[in-house]
Image (cartoon, rainbow, N blue to C red; front, top):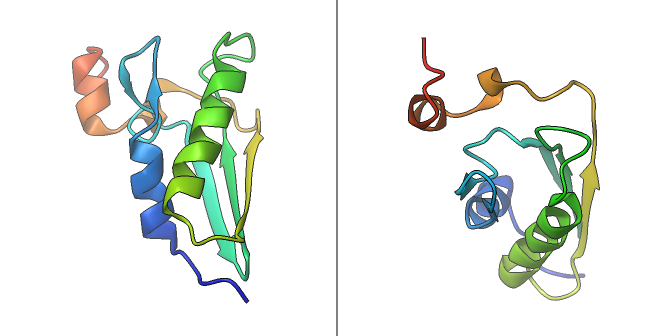
Length: 104
């Protein structure tokens, strides 16, 4: 049985994935909706700021690669795009909201 990785390590790996259009981590942008870690498997649900986002395939590939780089060998990594609920600027970290002028 492969070793395990925890949700914190997965989230930290995803912090290294930057949205090239926003110049900021997908975690800070609030694009990561969920992380589940089960025996031998990591599953991430993420979204884009828009269904028409041209970098969606790139970000899925980069997210998968970032997780695989820190996960033990043999772990199945699945990164799935979801569109519900729709992304809004409210999902961004306070730092990201401030950077884009969306803080209240």
